Amino acid sequence: MRRPAERESRKNDPEKTRDDILNVATEEFSAYGLSGGRVDAIAEKTRTSKRMIYYYFGSKEGLYLAVLEKAYRKIRSLEADLELADMPPVEALRTLVASTFDHDENNPDFVRLVSIENIHHANHMKRSSEIGELNLSIVRTIREILERGRREGVFHRDVDAVDLHMLISAFCFFRVSNRYTFGTIFHRDLSEPALYDRHKRMISDAVIAYVTQPVAKQS
Image (cartoon, rainbow, N blue to C red; front, side, top):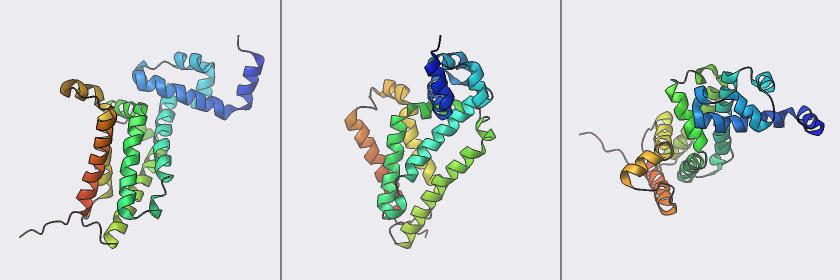
């Protein structure tokens, strides 16, 4: 039986209770997906109840959506903390690439959650106005870096910000989402430090080379 002090603590700190539920739900859904994830298991691990979980999130699908929103909130918050507007354009872009690379490596749950949501054709994500707004921020950030770079004469390509975001995300995401299949096929451990550092430099160099290389004129 739950001790009175524990029950009182949860009652007096609903935000902590909500965060605890989200943290455990992130592990549950990233491991088993929406259909395989069990609210009973989440309740047991957080020493709450299904009733309390539904009180906070409405339903299993509501909890899953809240997990997705928190995952995107985290990466967009990390990017905002970089203060890229204060850096020269090349440094800002390198810093952003490195941050995305490290985030995906250190947050495999995020990668699995996004992969699972793609299986569902983003049907749950479409219900969230917050995720759409959150992800507009990274597009604005990249657009501002590109515009500054072009004004200063260091970037020579007229690159679409969403395209560049996709280029960065694709490499960083793939290394985590396909780690085991890729590693098995090519006998490489993608988490090995030397390979990790090489890949991090490679995607950063590739992005910078793409935006700084003068575009050849068509004859």
